[in-house]
Image (cartoon, rainbow over all chains, first blue to last red; front, side, top):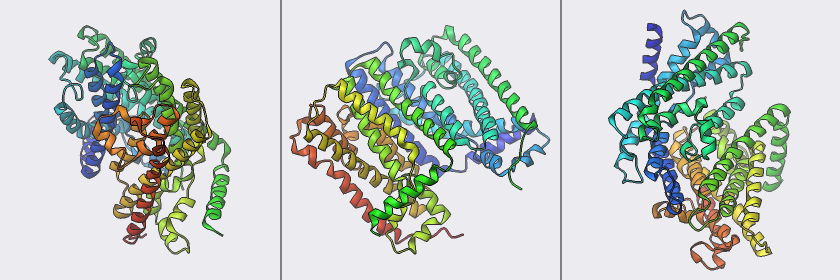
Length: 263
Length: 266
């Protein structure tokens, strides 16, 4: 266990290095956030919905702030798969899956915190109906934080499943773009899940993608009441376990039939 | 061989090289179809829930989305050298080889890349355009067809011009600059909906610095029968020229910038 924690810590420090690129990234992400908020405000102007606009803008900002958590891959691992350097990792006295799970976990956590916190601070300063609302209650905030943590576990597990496919096909572009599309669509990044047709929502909420950011955000805004919190967290926990087990099985299967590149 | 012929030749060669791996090409093209289909699905869902946006009907929204999609992906299809490959040309030193050849640099960059996988994105955009024009019951006249053609052409030039901004930063700092994405991809996301729904700062940005509103929305609104801001007919044919203007300015800046180009060396 200590080995994985060390990998995690090293990766955290690594993420802290690229601050210049980070500022550009934050500004760009904020711009996208403002455009989306302006669009939803215009849509709401003539057609008020059951979900208040302030909840939708909160949803948009939280999605933008933690965007990095969803779409971040481990560039080193991709290179290693392509060049065959992954053979060195096979020699390490740690479990390969756990090693990369810890790495991607640190990358996603630090990457999104570093970008997310400044963005949320700015979004909190925006006027009502443009920015982010405070959490529904202190308890809702805690529930949302717990859900975010479970969401992170799901996200890393999903990332490792994508990587398992990459190990087989060597070309990450096809499978990655498909899975990313599923992710941005059904996680509520392109359009808040609360605005999907009501009949779709019941199904989409059960998919693993809804566990990533949608579940924590709904707990935060209070769209999901605290009485449902336990049920939501359990569903997330089940998905995290299933996805991790599935990923491990895929990685182990890959290990048995791995053909190394290079020479 | 004149420049245009050279460009057509290069496109032919690139197309053949892309088709060398038919199954991979087919899969990636399908992936593009699913991706752009997903984007369109979002518009469908928005129309399903909200029905109208300001004074624009759902059909109008499909039309605006189609205009943006077709222009953006036509640019990516034929101008991949500028919109996608340029940073790697700088990083890998491929740009150096362009400098010693007796042709314009921008010509060579444009001849150096194409992305035929985008054909499905263009198809989705065209489908959305047709659907939008049907739903909005547009009566097509030669004048309207001319407006549409001019608008899409100028839209392409505008998008090329905006990507040239990124290219200029890239010459300077070797790394591509994420912030410019706010104008290019951000402009695409924002301006696939009509401009007059946005607050003034965004309207000004997309009418001056990145004038998608002038190249795409003014003609589109005319075609849909409700001229933007009630502007007179001649504006429909004049304002899109701003796309060519931005392209001309950025070409000049690009050529100035290339003088300061220092190879990455290797």
